[in-house]
Amino acid sequence: MRRTVRAGLAALAVALAASGCGAKSDPQSLADDTTQGIYNADLARTTAHFDDALKSQVTRASIGDLADKMHALGTYHGLKAVQSEPDKGRYDYDAAFDKGTMRIQLRLDPNQKIGAYRVVPVVGSAPQPSTS
Amino acid sequence: MINRRLACLTLAAALGTTALPAAPALADGAASTRNIILGGAAAAAGTLLIINHNKKVHEKYAEYDRRQAATQAAANNAEAAYQSERQAYAHEAALVSSYQHEVSLQHQEVLRLRHELAMRNSAQHVAAAPANARTNPAPQQLANVSYGWGAL
Image (tube, rainbow over the protein chains, first blue to last red):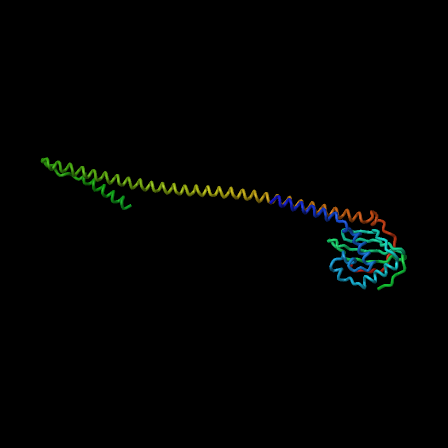
């Protein structure tokens, strides 16, 4: 009985340690992966880390529209962390492009799935995109 | 009870018979011998009755004692059974206590692992953002419009 319990606890500890050491679960990696998916108009990659509710809102058209806005700024170079509120699951990053930046705003669910993904143009860094 | 009364009456009759004024003894030897034999028989009968009565009394007392002994034995058995049950309960209680202790230890271990996991996640999140992110946000002006999915 006790041996079984101890074995279970050991397995739990290993699982927790493994989950804590996960390589691709940090918010910046999730945001970068999603941003690259949008930039490449890749639906599967874009929604790979979305939760089910958010996945249902995504269409190929909306991804294409956002990809066009990003391509208007040139080549995507990556993200830079700007602000984070882990207790609320909120993270902001600046996405760097050749001709400017865009603010990527992320909300993570407790299960490390993306519950919201917003892109805000930075004024003055690029020509104002047309609202849609 | 009836036996006792019969025995008493018989004894009283025997005693009464002996106490009655005897007829004046005749001078002949045959009468004297007969009287002696009758008296001896009466005495023997009374003695037998008394012995029988005593036997009955002793039998009653023996039966009473046996009943008492049986009752005592039953009581002793009940006491022994109670002691056994009590010991069994004490063992069960000790077992339950050990289980409770084990559960408590497991709960503490789970809490410790949860805390460790939270600390790891927190460390990752802090590492992901610059240290001065809150105090010195980037001086950039954001547009009033945003694109994407979901509510922040």
